[in-house]
Length: 359
Image (cartoon, rainbow, N blue to C red; front, side, top):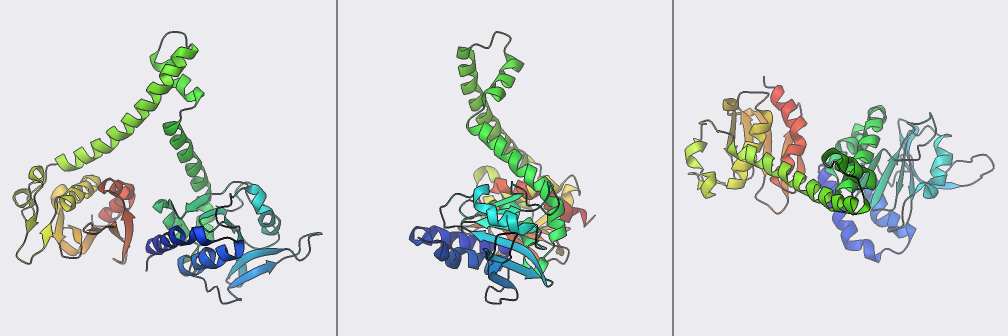
């Protein structure tokens, strides 16, 4: 089972069981141990691999325990401190992690309440745990962009150097995204003043500031909607070339009709729209007439040169949870959940990289 599917399963478990959890120990058993075992891939019942109640005396602090220490290559690599689900996670809750971090070989520490996982390293000073996490995972609001980095911490693909090297960018991108999100929801005075000063020549009285607060918030919302609509419009209006399946005549997007071939495979308007989105992403890499598709009963495949050995991706849209399947260098598919067709654009880099390999 792929890491995203494992996260989805654990997310469902948190949704169903969180209200019944009353203690930290119950949180560990219900959520944290499954995360370590099922998502990260470490054997929680092997004390050589996962050490519960890890003791490491620090200065005058004797016999203090940290909830879990994970070993890899005979060294402590990850420290985990747990709190009861629902408890807020802040620096004050991580005091033991701070103390233990610099006296072990661990480069990664995790603070969690079973729902939210905060990942720390030592970007600011060597062997000293940062006060701000470089990565956050909320199982009730999963950002699937974190999955590639999370994969680097799993037992089968452990690459701490790679994740530490990327941690700086991850940390600041995460913080910038939060700032942008907060400005969309509730623009700050300084931001409103900046916007107003660009379009208004008069004096910025309080009345004017109040007006521009409303206008700025409205403009941000409209701009975001415009971006989404423009992407969809661009994908749908791209002029398709005749393919092996004669898509231009077999499917009419304006009528939103479905076509069925002689094998009973039904091609839906959503699949065609997804095809055009992918095509619009990779047409800067390869000529549009090389991008084709083949529909099957289990998935909708997008190919190069109508060749099954040159897959770009697969779309799994005829189900309650939609997925886009991406391929690695060995042609192994990894499925990523998507909430809408527009989320295909989130995988533009991976799709372009795959297309470039077929040049």
